[in-house]
Length: 233
Image (cartoon, rainbow, N blue to C red; front, side, top):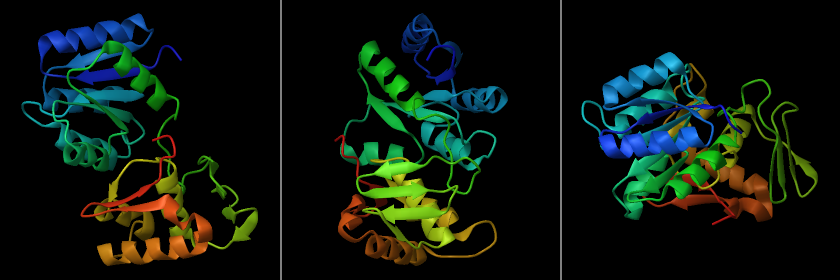
């Protein structure tokens, strides 16, 4: 898995140099930026496979960069690993909810960072269920096949609407990641329809009903939104 392009956005010069050096030693191509605006411009120009993104940055912080990258079709396929000095659970949930794929809390070892980067890159570019070639997913007794527009639960086919399939696939493709209701609205509404956060709750209730004994795979994160259970944790 060598040769992927990684952009490192970190304002601490020593840390930026250490991270870049160790990634290059592992065979990755690396470009760096020292502030948020420069970093966002670099990612938009280079479209790397992965961004190592510090949460606290001058000019434009990591929260704003995450939002910008995930909302832009040109950059939304780039994976994101956040670096954060904040270790409490609420900050971690916020970072993941904004669009990051994983996080590493400072101070960290370079081996840990490399392992996280490799694990995220193994997922490949981020895809949605409404994109051609979206990944077929197997989660416990649930199989989601977007190309065939099919979902089976314990081997039995179950009918899901197009919106329900998009929502289920989006959650299941990134287990453990928390999504706010606002982030999930586009998976239900498409480009033109107007829906509310209450509509998201209704769709989640429908998903759980159709998943039967696997309904608990979709977890509610109180005060935030929803996530698909990550059995690895």
